[in-house]
Length: 377
Image 1 (cartoon, rainbow, N blue to C red):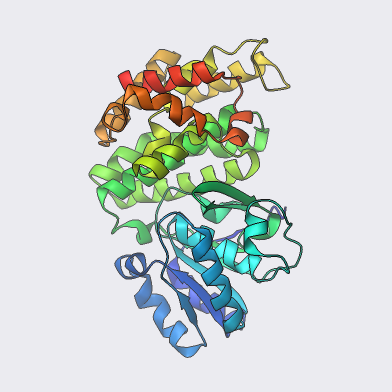
Image 2 (cartoon, rainbow, N blue to C red):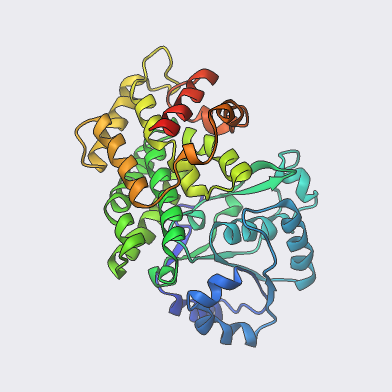
């Protein structure tokens, strides 16, 4: 992994001069049309796109689907693109990663996405322009895709963008609900990255700063936004992305996917509803159920770092803080989403890979209890 990637561009106004200097002639642009218009990016980028042989890919569903990836690959190959640009939220960025990379491979997209074939050929450069402050996808070397209703994560160094435009002005038009949901995703990524089995000193630095920034600025960014709060959340999102690029996510993400796919809960909120009970669960890790090879003491030290980030003296206080934040952000309670009888089914559809990265081993019964605590809390 190239530690210099992605190169950060702090203003959308710097994009066209950069593209001109790179002598880009045939950009392939994966575009969320609504985000393009609402963010103001169209006013800056359209003159450049009109001068070039630009191919736009705009017709896709929320949460990347294999069908969309395959259609994008066909369009990409027809365009003979020399550069890829993604503009929008996590869906647009993940689709651009997958389309640009998989279009250059000899194997079928389906085989690569489900893990039956590798990414082996070089890909064209990618610029990610996030218009939300939440997914951190512009800073990661993986992308999610749904195949036949099942969620897969494709990981490869070539999926890490060469350039990332982290400009808080692009998020100013976001409604409260999207600001809250995407901000919660960044907040959860940061917390999970700190306790993750794969945590390193570098990832903890990124994640700790991201957690502090999100904790202090998310409510303001959603409810009474200022430029400073938007700027802080854009940085928090990017840092959280850099953190999970090293560690990946853990149990709250593992439990979230069925809530999104089966009940339509926005991703960030689906993750956040189990964050507090999972914090309490992981804080009780012992040597008997610790999955981190560094041992339970190392996990407890990282739990203590989470408490410092949230300015709490106890796990109970931190859990209360998280629950109050979700209430303030109008995050739908789990009890309004599903019934008691649905909890076991949610656990049965859990992402096993993400569970392995959780620092405390969890049985099926314990995961049901975590969901019950989230539902009743």
